Each structure stands twice: as structure tokens, then as C-alpha cells.
Image (tube, rainbow, N blue to C red; front, side):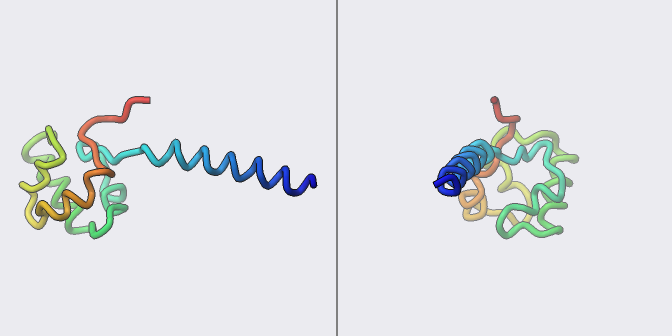
Length: 91
């Protein structure tokens, strides 16, 4: 009985924590190469291209501006859009 109760509490805590982190988005204006590489299909060269574009052209105003980065098209942007932001998330 105690085991089941403990497991239920533990599961509840884990699910609550995952919901908090599920809303975390990667800010493409401040993201590191490592953070960008957590996106599906983003390797070192794509991450470097995003950072280089950002350094040369200033902050992205919208996620859709990623289309200006060589090698990134609308399909990739659509795939990543739920994971990206141009500003820090508000808590």
C-alpha cells in the first residue's frame, strides 16, 4: 500500500515537472550552438549559420525570419515553430 502511494506521488511530481519544462522555448536571439542543435535536423553547420546570420543582421523579429538563413526553408521553420521564440518566455 505504501509503495503504491509513494509511486503515485512520485509520478505526479514527474508529470508536473515535465509540464513546466514543456513550455520552454528556445530563444533564437540568445540561443547557443548547443541549444540550437537540440532541434530536430539542426547540426553544427546549421546552428552556426543561424548564429552568424544573427550576429551580422541583428535580432530576429519573428521566427519566420529564419528563412533568410541559408539552408533553412519553410518546412523546417514549420517543424520547429512550436519550439522557438524570439523573446524570453514569461513566467
